[in-house]
Amino acid sequence: MLIDADLPQATCSSWYALRGPLKKPGGLRIDTAANHRELTDKINHWAGELAAEPGFIIVDGPPRIAEISRAMVLLADLVLIPAGASLADLWATGDILAMVKDAKAINPAIQARLVWTRYRRFTNQAKTLAEQAGAELGVKALKTTMGLRVAYPEALGSGVTVAELADKQAKAELAALMAEVHGIMK
Image (cartoon, rainbow, N blue to C red):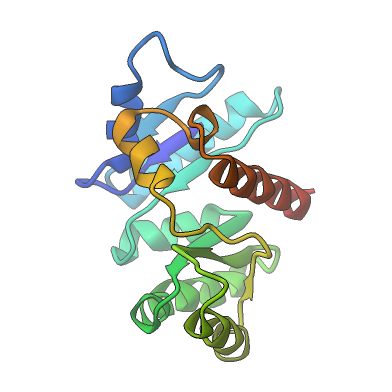
């Protein structure tokens, strides 16, 4: 289940609409939520349906709308925080990291991980930022990084997944990300 709570941007909903009725991935359903009450209701509804079958509820949320972000964090098992390899991207994680810290007082089982995006591991900046992030932010980064690849925006704008494109490196990154997340969730 994919819930697009990043309204009005609605990137996930737009991607899903681009796929068209014949290309919908098996079993993937999408819904939207405009506020914390609607998000809570939808997660509770879908969690009940998914309890009988294996599955995940993925919520795409806004970067800085406190009401819905707070609800997402409180309801999460795992919070993935995307950050590009720049200081500005790291500064932007402050709000969500504070929410994770507050939510852990209510639910200590919540986990959070930083996901490096547009990451170029061979640069000095990326290495320095990775070291700083671990020491200063107090959140672990996933071992898997998402490189600076044309395949990611191309897939989004075409209504396909990276797995459906020819970019072998992007496919490998996505597979590694999924495996790492599954490992954390076990």
